[in-house]
Image (cartoon, rainbow, N blue to C red):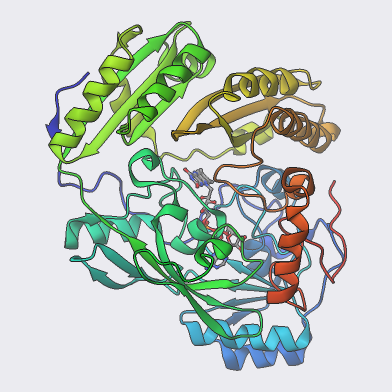
Length: 511
Ligand SMILES: Cc1cc2nc3c(=O)[nH]c(=O)nc-3n(C[C@H](O)[C@H](O)[C@H](O)COP(=O)(O)OP(=O)(O)OC[C@H]3O[C@@H](n4cnc5c(N)ncnc54)[C@H](O)[C@@H]3O)c2cc1C
């Protein structure tokens, strides 16, 4: 374990461009991009495009801009990009910088029955922002910035298109505060995207997932009206409507404002690492730590395969821990950690620094794609009782898929009831079998997780990639979700084809 140290005041990462950054170019250029035609596209008539121009200051209709905006970081979409294709091709990109522009675009599209897909950082990894039915992309990246910081109440009012790194930079350097939401994609993603996908930051053990941080929302509905949900620190005013929109991936409404909880920026931190003989034994140590009520902000457990690949730790399953905050809290959480890890080998705490140094690095998968590799990550949750079985069965199921070359996992976010397992798989299928392999690996892994009692997703969400599992994962509750969708968006214009919800525009087919 390292000694407890004072936190350094400097911002830990260079600020990004506050704009989307998709790592793979569209082969042949965006102007030549073709749609993969996953569904029958809905064209935007010129008269509607004209009305959109009067509603929104920035409107583009050229193919290059539309194709570029029609894609995200979904691994399958990246593969399509090297073939010069996008999953669906929008006809218009409207860029809103205020709520009135969002509501005007929605009114026009609702009247004309044109699909509207909200987009922001486009860092989603499930194809959630791909406009499968074409139509209008409503880009929220210009709708950004902090509205208000209430230091006394530790509450933030922030616009949806604010990129995470810029938000944290301003909060820390100007106010000495933090939201505590620090996803790997902090420089690629926005507040609206975090909320819409029900995201998780790397320090979630201390600060919670985004759904724990939200106090209130402003949501533009499909008909162009705006509703305000939540608002008070706690309330008993019927069901919590914040949570209806958190995770709805742009299918129920467009988030145009949010109130989030704040915390004082951390003053102290401490790091430690331990090696375990088995993954199950290490998971159990995590369970006991959580049970004692004061887990460190970060508790990452790599199975031996990932640990050795990243940190050359041989056959040890590696637990990395980091805590930050008030000195008394940090020291207390680490004394609990030390007690619960007493049976494990203490490892070099410098490994945590190594992880910290790389935790927001994003490497382009272009090389993997060119080498013909198919890969993805699958993050799910399960109870502590179910996790060892989920781990064994999901890995065995994916490894059994022909052409798989590797499948491993780490535990990345933990709760008193269970934790998130983050699987990574890779395969080397024949060139014409990439998509079939990709689908088979997802089918095998997901079905093994669901059968062993795990959840469909922990923080990446559903999008297109997991849409086919939604009914299976939710059971009859899926019909309740579909009824909510119909009630809030009777013409089905909002991000159709996502979350597996039925759409008046037709079905989505892939592959
Ligand atoms: C390298 C990498 C690392 C990642 N690490 C993490 C991680 O650590 N934790 C994590 O949770 N995720 C992670 N992700 C996934 C991704 O960054 C998140 O899902 C993120 O929340 C998406 O935000 P975005 O602004 O990019 O949204 P987009 O990708 O643009 O959109 C995602 C979905 O949200 C909807 N949406 C966007 N804005 C709004 C809005 N204002 N109102 C309604 N709907 C909206 C879109 O329609 C779409 O359905 C990672 C992705 C990458 C590429």
